[in-house]
Image 1 (cartoon, rainbow, N blue to C red):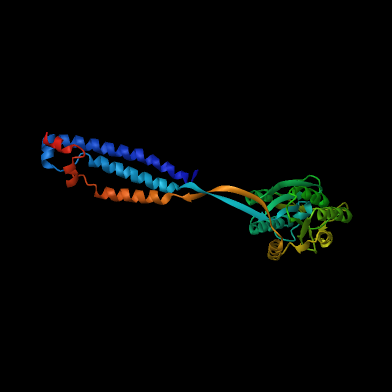
Image 2: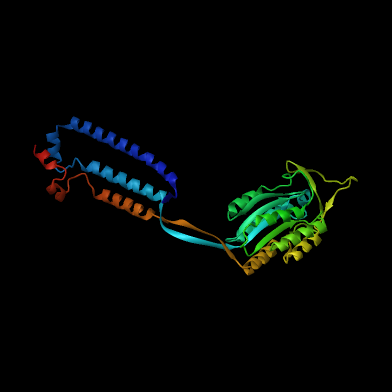
Length: 350
């Protein structure tokens, strides 16, 4: 098996035909000028050691050297070794609140963007854990199933917005129940859910019941509260410009606040922890330490081909060929002349 590191360099091979066209044109021009200067016998008498084959040989050496350098730049990689990779880790689901209250800008740039950046920072600190993503407002919808592809996780994470769910509210119980279905491996020792929310509009009894179901399934929930307890209005924007702020039925501006009460209860029900999501570094440190203390379970083992770079031989061969070209003069080499490899001696005598 093989793969090419920089296949775009193959386009440089287009120069080789141009090089040969130039060589053939110059050779034809030389022969034409030489016939104008004198007969072949006269030319042989004037330059008896001139080789008719070496110019062509020099061109072949240059072409081969050029080709070797191009292949070296492409860097072919050949698989010569099979390795077994064993992955050990924890299954983690991120449940992110995408209700309108997450647009409040009491934490820059707003609560939702802060949550997305926090999850992205957590992903950067993970090694071999599997992750999944859920978005929820009045209902919960799956965004990414359990996977080890952190690149895909970040892509789905960036796509989250408050317009993706038409019905508004904060059905955190639905998010917890959906997260339970993400964990389908009965042998997995540790299962973790991170809930990122401002904690508003949660129904205590229904939510705690969902947390108890999660606890019975062996799931530990960490809740991350974003926003300030002082609160902020919910901006309604058009093309990035604030047009107005959301108002209630009494035509008064709605002030949304971070409410940690329910989030704390959820975490305590599952023996998890409530964290201030506004402090990114504190969250990263706590989560890293918590995951390190958890028992890791091997959940995947696969074989893959370990590719090795093969460009050095091609580069060395290219430079050696160019070095050879330096010593290939257009006159006959004495020892080559004695061997008469190219049948030039008989031609000279004739």
